[in-house]
Image 1: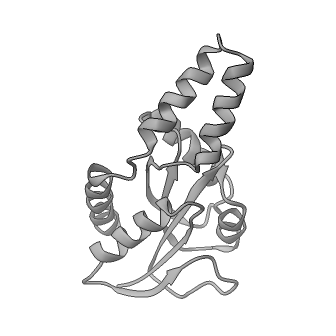
Image 2: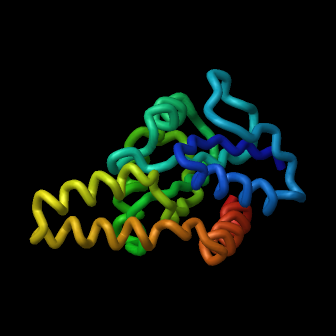
Length: 169
């Protein structure tokens, strides 16, 4: 089976997930592995992934998925905010609107990923200006929890998901 793995990674989290998928597909023919490309590789299944950019996929992934027609897609992503399947489902629904209905979506996978330190610094500055803001305290706590992700549990989960995508094919 020919597989293409196309991803966009801002801080390395999504690249880590993509590399784990590639390793898990060792018995398949990975015809393309890398960031978005102008020409769509010819494959049986497309594993497409992105970091979360203000609640949506990266611009390059959005533009890439708009071009795909009549393909099988398994979508994956990472997000700084994690722990909530409903949040991940919301993120997936946002990218899904850009995927042509002629495609078959096999499933999706999300996990938490660490964020750039500048994000925490911005929260810290904001909390000095608004010390009673409970949301900012939650944001800092979430940032700190995200520092270890994707972790071994996330990587094991993406391996299981990858195999399920092959079975759902």
